[in-house]
Image 1 (cartoon, helix red, strand yellow):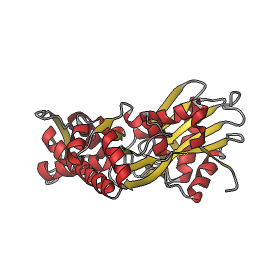
Image 2 (cartoon, helix red, strand yellow):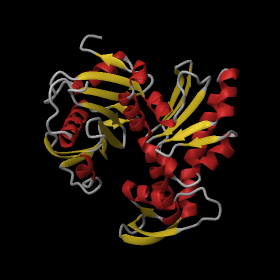
Image 3 (cartoon, one colour):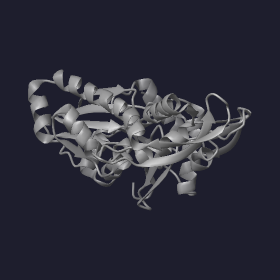
Image 4 (spheres, one colour):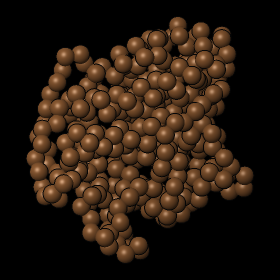
Length: 337
């Protein structure tokens, strides 16, 4: 592998992250593609995101991954290859591509990763898959060969993955359709209900970023502009942290309930190890201040918050690529499965 380029790829619902081994760098761009009249490519990544919620009807802006799984093969293929070219214009022959994938990945889905890798200008790429919880575990420093039971909760953009690792593998996993985007939508709904104001998802996302907090006693405010639901005219209102926290807290509480139910169905010896070790919490949404305290109180056990947040998976891939002792948790995908 020393003579070829090697990449780690995390095709997230919100962002695509690509690790380039030779340059030891990570490219992170929005998982967005902008297309005019269904067939004319205009922009990808961050450039496409700048058009989101501003585009006319003739231009469609959207992602290629939903709930952590490949959704639109054509878009994900175009996005991936353009971002790879942006990161390394001269990839050369036989590049190695390591993908983080859901722990439950069907043979059909595995062939999809092989197909998007062999399209475009790449020449004879080697395709490897790594279960996403394994990537997270490596980044979190969990000893895969020794753990008797470790739970990882990754709060992503459209879904939250709850996984348990034991006996050197992912033994249980569950994905629930609650993530950062659902929290953004909940904020928009709450603003409409309380303030009679329509706002876009980008505004909801910004409100979550600046106002959401589980810190006791904090109550900031921001003035925003939207459309009055009664008059249809632009209107300014003030939104407080308490409004945002009510919307976000309801979704986080649902995640906590799922964790509790998950633990109740876990074999006692594994559940005991998890409660002693603490639950590992990661994902972009876990940047909300003191969210780990909310989880701790709701679930009733210690919480280990990752400092990598939404980069946890790609950092795990980076470690796996650079340490041969971790290769046994990868699997190569070839044309015939």
